[in-house]
Image 1 (cartoon, rainbow, N blue to C red):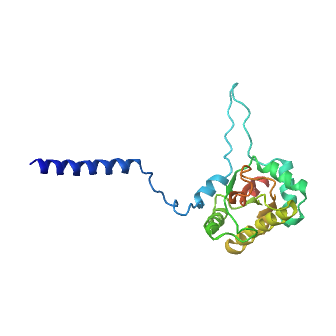
Image 2: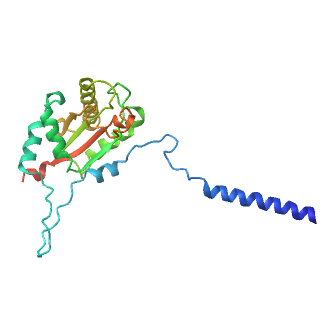
Image 3: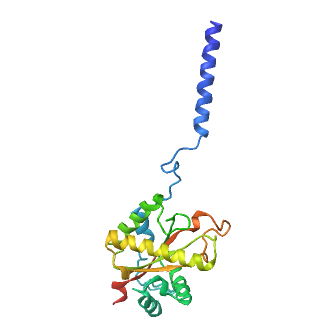
Length: 223
């Protein structure tokens, strides 16, 4: 009986240790194996959807409410760069676009590229396709979008500026060819290595990315 009791105790101990280990092991999530950071169409739509304009209310304590409708200066800027080639934008125009874009619905997509190349990486193709579906959805169709290309800090400023422009053009060409989006609805701009996403790791892959910004709803702006 003692041997039986000892055997039972040993088995119980193994089960207990196994249960404890199962509680301390991190759960596995989809995408962990490939460290995928692809986004979905819905995520992009939610990020880029214009902020609904709140109805005006009366009351002494109500602060002025922000108006999401583009002002005249913003509209003039966007209209002046619509249909322009990426390389034709001056440094002043690029900074003006960045200034306006910071307050607009945007999403920073980790659409990465092959090293020293404007070729979309295979692992990021799903994100580009999700972007194409999102920009043609009823919630976003009819807006003007900025597609901004960025590089890491390796190389000269001139080289990276050219590379970022080619990367923005690469995304635009894919969206126009595969999803029929009007080329004039996509304003492409390159920022080279001037706006690193992770300055603490200047040559990291995360810096080789594309940011998309919803700049203007043409229907609203025309009213």
